[in-house]
Every structure is written in C-alpha cells, then in structure tokens.
Length: 140
Image (cartoon, rainbow, N blue to C red; front, side):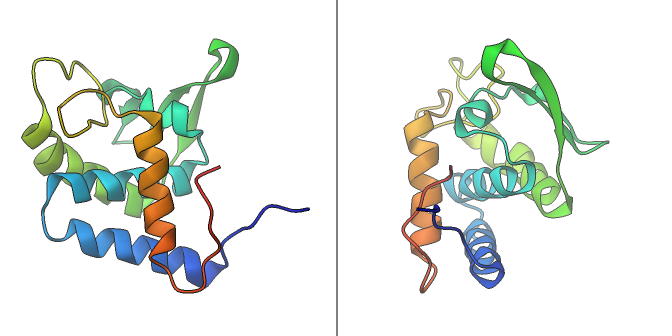
C-alpha cells in the first residue's frame, strides 16, 4: 500500500496552524514552526534536522548544510516561509531556551539541550493531527 500523504490544502492548513501558534511569541511554538517549515521545505530527515548546528544554516543564501546517512554532506535550499521561521527562532526563541549545555545546536528542547528526534516527530504528528481530515501521519 502507498503511504498517506497530505493534500495541498491540508499541508497549507498545517503550516498556517504552526504559524498561528508561533505568533504568540512562545519559544516552543517558534521552534515547532521551524521544525515543520524546515522539514516541509527541505525534505531532510528528522535525524538530520535534529543534528543541525546554527552554523549549518546559511541565511543569506537560504541553504542548510546537512550531514546525512554515511556521513555524506549535502545542501538543501529552503524558501521564504522557512527563512521567516528561522529568523524568529534565532532572534526570539533560541535565546530564551539556550543554556551552557546548548552548544551550537540549532533546535533545543525545553531544558536547553539539543532537540531529540522523538520530540521532533511528536511536533509534526501534533501539527498534522490539528488539521481536519488529515491522515494520521508523522514526518517520514
């Protein structure tokens, strides 16, 4: 059987829901929007997303440098919505959660450590579940 996919209107509704949550300025909502936007825009794996460091992102050229399977490095472009989410996260969200243990990690959990893959999957699952009629699916 073929995997479930979102229709275009459902994907738009998921992005709109993530953006609406982030407009409140909550650091976790800003992070969650960035997770959804980057995964959708780049098509990278969740593990690759969670492994990103701040310096892996080229905001000027809207590129992300990813270390994938087999330690192979590649770049993936992202669009304006993801760039806006990234800008908001780096200016308002990340500084609010960052601790001495954060290091260079781009995405942080509630305790300021690098975001866990399971947390990122949960974010995507909850975002998609908020869309009426959307199939029960995760990021893969």
